[in-house]
Amino acid sequence: MDLSYLGETPFKNVFDALGFEYQTFPAEKQGMIKSVKESINGGRQAISFGILGPPEAFMVASYDKVCCTLILQLSVFVFDN
Image (cartoon, rainbow, N blue to C red; front, side, top):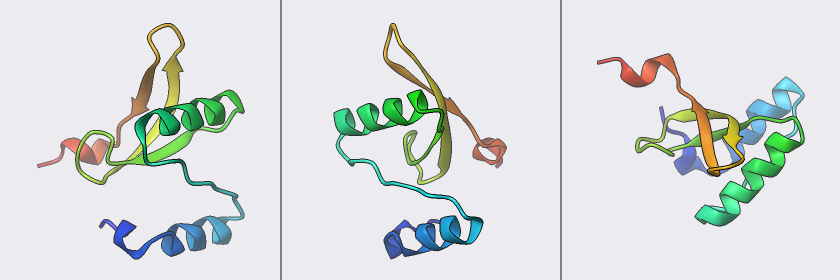
């Protein structure tokens, strides 16, 4: 279920309950890519929503430093019918 229409509150509550910190990235493409790369370089993977279309969560695990391509870890549920 997509809870993004509720704003940041559901996400903040989950991360607070788990004892993790989080930050949001800019919605514009270049700012988002820069922030994701900085996060990965700092040893923190990024969770992104809607990169490939529907508002499903994706783990951005790495990126190709030569081609500047983000490498996504897809959920097994993405391809369920």
